[in-house]
Image 1 (cartoon, helix red, strand yellow):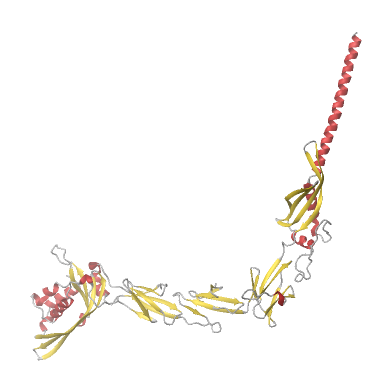
Image 2 (tube, one colour):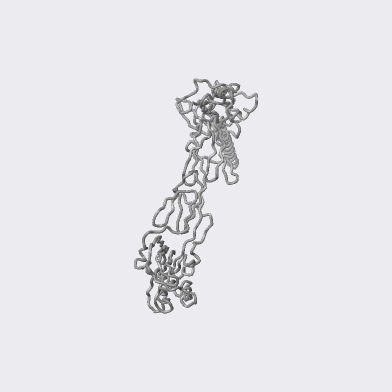
Length: 522
């Protein structure tokens, strides 16, 4: 019985061992099948085919290389102007392959049981062509391993990427040759103002020659367009002169000694216009391009401004004091006004008779002339409104009578004239010295016969507290000493200021004489 139990246990062990062995065999077989399917799936990927294509294409730079037979072959470029140039698609690909090769999926499609994938082949980001793969025998294993047998259907090179083109203007008798081939008359177009030809499908950068009546013509290439240079000029102008060629502002190419040099190269005879700072323009005769530039010097008071059209000249820095500035300077602070300095301006113009404007603040005065000197403000014929109550003639007559000993009052009339003078001023002190000095005692006895030729002109308002005018009159006198007639002429520019110089603790400003230009000569 014990032997029977032993035999039964051994049998179970044998059966278990066989089962494990069979299970291991089945596992190995299953793993082997899955591994085979994975390898088959990996090998059936289209990327394998594109990698093989790129590896093959890398050898294209070798002279012995031949494009695969599935390549679409073309003759590329113009058959007229590419003489001597390899026009095959192979030559194009060779010229384009310069950097690392790559492919990019461009799309996929299917037709019945056939699959198609298109890739863009690139070199350094530049497209070389389109690679089409063909997939057949599509199948699925182990439920999710879908695969097909892929192969190259065709490779289509891009044949226009390296084309060059050129547009050539041919005015007059100018004719052109491109890569040694003459442009025919049939290729010359006339739908623009200037005849031209347009050549494209050039595989290499073109070599162009231009001739006119058997002579070579220079040209300028700009943005793929050739402009013959049939008219060439070199002009030099000061830096403030603007140059316009055919209406467009020209740029200078050299600078020296404050002058700009312009090189003008045109295929048609150009129109050249120059314009100065004042806006005056003039057409340049290119057969005789020398132009005259005229200098203007204008001196005006510093409270005026000068314009020439829209141009505002700058002062030269040269100034001149007003002729009576020294005599009036002691009153500037007292009356809050001053006499203007004269300021010099200079400008240059192409206009031999330029007109310029002097702005006074109230009006605009138009002036012509190469040299203009205005050292004082423009005068008026009427008394300024701010001095409407003043009697200019009366005050000046008081001063005249005082100087000829005809003024009544204490100290030879000094106190009567003093109320029209600025206390302690130069004129005031002069009057006091005259009234109390010995010179006044030498005056001859006389009588006044009358006053003739009275005039008050040239009123100039410097501010609300200062103005001047020119006063003239003649006093006819009879001198008893020698029984002769004598004239006393008052011919002065008189300056009046409006101040309060009294000590009466009352605000009572009034008009007084500050200075008399010319009285010192009496």
